[in-house]
Amino acid sequence: MKRVLIPLLMLWMVAAVAEETVSVYQLTGAIQCSEGTGIPPEEAADLLRGQGVKVVSAERRTLPQDVANSCGAPTGEANVMKVVAVDWSAFLSENPDAGGYGIWVFDENTVQIYKYDGTLRCGMGREISLKEMTKELESSGIDVVTSRKGEDGLTHINVCGASTGSTNVYVIDRGSLPAAERLGFRLLVTRELTQRIKPAGTKPRQMGMAAPSLPQDPEKPREPDPTPLLW
Image (cartoon, rainbow, N blue to C red; front, side):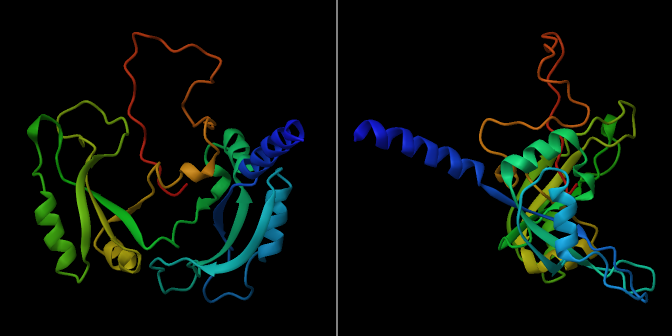
């Protein structure tokens, strides 16, 4: 009996990992001052299914970010789909830019935002400290939970006056995101937040990265991980 239970348990665990899900979204295409409501959720789900991605559920939601109130601008309506993580990982390996989809992170109680701190190469520019930028947020009624220095992980041209890539990162309440964006802050989607995109041990290839089968040059310094914004 035990010999039967062990393989069954292993099969159940494999199935559980395979059914791990992640929520993704795409704007519906609906435009202000125009007729039509854009692509329906089920039609959007079918488009993903056609790419080999299993869709568990699909619904219409409103993107909780500032949307310009003008004719011709998007309405901010999005189709949010819960998909199987292992399928999404495979989709990303074929579409490093995620095909216009984003990770739906707006159900979290808090979000991370960032803004460049003003530093430039060769000591040019003036650094805006974490404390100074915190005051900017708080003066607009935005409470800061935590703050830290960060790097955007991008390759910046090595000339005087170019950006250093240094940022100030803040954790704020999700409801304060629109107000922070009006101040010039941008939403930061961290790698920890997107770990659920793929099961442990899988690493979808990203744009600009060598295929896993190619050996890395030991003399080449490791490049920093880029900041993964909403794709």
